[in-house]
Image 1 (tube, rainbow, N blue to C red):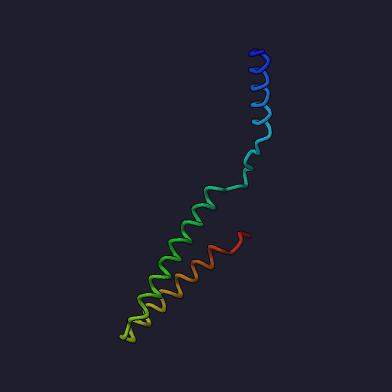
Image 2: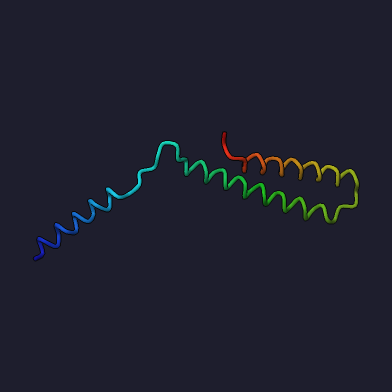
Length: 84
């Protein structure tokens, strides 16, 4: 009985291994994770800029922060565009 149980276990393991989906060469899970991480960092920068802008009274500094905000938002938009 133990021998039959072992062979079924091995057979099940072989089936499970065969049923696993092999990653395709076009699937870049690591690259996607890197892009997602970069978007998260940019979103954090965006929130920080917005918080800083609330208390600014100097118009030149405010313009500088607005430019930085537009730049960060453009980077986020570029990263979220689907690849062509």
